[in-house]
Each structure stands twice: as C-alpha cells, then as structure tokens.
Length: 355
Image (cartoon, rainbow, N blue to C red; front, side, top):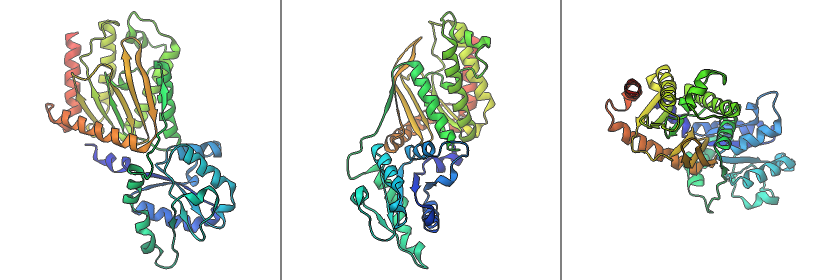
C-alpha cells in the first residue's frame, strides 16, 4: 500500500462559496473542515492569469460537496445563487451553512447548517460538519443521485478527454494517485518527441497520424506527472502478443514500460500482473478526481466507448473495488506487495529475452 497517499486521496473536497465580508466566519468553517479530515476549496487558491469564472466552475465541478455560506451580506449577491444553480445542475450535493435568518429563493429548499457564534463556537459547530455527515450526504443522499457522464466513442476522443481531465486537476495545483487496469497501461506510450523512431516502432506496419501520436504523448506525460507526485497502482498483462503490429512493436511497448518502472521508486509503485484479464478491460482512476472506464476494445483501434465522470460516489466505489482486486493479485504474486515493481521488471525483462 502506498501509505503516504492513502490519507489524502480519500478526503472529500468541499468548495466554499462566500462573500469576502464574511472572511472571519469562513476561516472558522475552514478550520473545522480541516480538523475533521475534509479538504476545503476556496477562491483564494485560484491561479493568477486565468479566468475567475472558469476557475470557479472548475472548482465546483471537482468538488464532492458545494457549501454556500449564507449571511445577510452574501445572500444579496446574485453570484451565490448562480453558483448554487451550477452545482445543482451537476448533481453535486449542496450543504449550506447559514448564519442569521434563512434566506428565500432556491436556497430555501436546502437543508442548511445553522452556524453558532460565541467564544465556544468550535465546540458548538464541530459535530455539524463532521466527516460522517459528509460521507452520508455523498454515499446515501436523500434522493437517488443522477451522476453526469461524458462518453468518448473513439480512441482519439478518449485520449483527448483523458488529457483534458488530467490537466484540469493539475490546473487546481493538485495531483492524484494513478490507478490503471488494462494491457500495458499508459506508461508504455513513448514520452519522446513524435518524430522519434520509437513511435513508428510502436505500431510496426500499421500507419497512424502524428496527431494520434501527439495526443498519446500528452496522455503519457500528464499521467506520469500525477504518478511521480502521488504514485501509481497498475494491473497489467505483459503477455499480450500484439500480433497485428508484430514482435518489434511489442518489444517497443514493453521496453517503454520497463524504462518507466525502472525510473520509479518502490514506494511509489504497485504492479500486479493478471494474465487472465479480459482483453477489452480498461479502467483509469486519478486520485478521487475522475474515472475513465472503457467498455469495448479492438486490436489496432484501441479502447472505445469510454465513459468519464467526476461524480464522487461512482469514483469512490470503483476506487475501492480496484484496490481490493489489486491487493488480492499482489498477495498471490511472488514477493508480495512490497516487491511488486521489481517482480514486474523481472517478468518483462524475461519476456523481452524470449521475443
């Protein structure tokens, strides 16, 4: 288990919408959220040089819970109602914190946390924002959730969306542990310039455009940026023959993956080998930020019909299922979890000798 990562990637992200006149109140709310093991997200973390509205939308889109702070100052601001509408349209759970009289409009239909001030404000409010309350709101909502998905029909569409989703997380100055199941993972893609001979070796006699190469290179580079910061867990099958492309293409892919594994420290990598994995199987989970799952695949065409979501309960369920499968495979593997990177290196090295 990559212990230094596990704690942070299971945190729920809470985007706080507030008026700057209520900064003291928001600081109190933020301190309790952090104390309770939650991750508050505020506009003070926005990057300079980027559109304010776009960043707000990006933060809300990636939040597990949207938390408007409702006071006599904030309810007069039209943007707070617009932001609530945006979060509701994305089916993100809303948990308002109200100080003073509960306002009307669309907010009146939401169950709000009544904030109490005074010298003992921390004791009065700590339990109202407990991790358990957020967990119940996300996992067991009062109404059946309607998660939003995007579907990529073709390989290029899939890669485009994967790059976009990974880049949006980085734009929040955040990273996620990379979980990937299927074939040789994205780390068999060359990170070299697209005119490098390794790109042609990768596909053997098959011909693909430089546009495809550029998209795939972006996929590799961005996912590696996440992995080098937060680690990766891979379920792969290095025995796939890639007959359509030939032994040279297979060798090129295995060498690329081998180079990546050799460059990573043991504590950042877990690799399980599953020779019985369905050939059309592919799952990618980056932290608890997003999920991409392909439901069809064809040799030479890549993974198709890939669904993407940022919906927290769906991601959490798949993340936990992935970890159970990975741990079961690692326990049955020579050397166990702590030796999985070196075991994978040995297996791939032996396959390359036999090609």
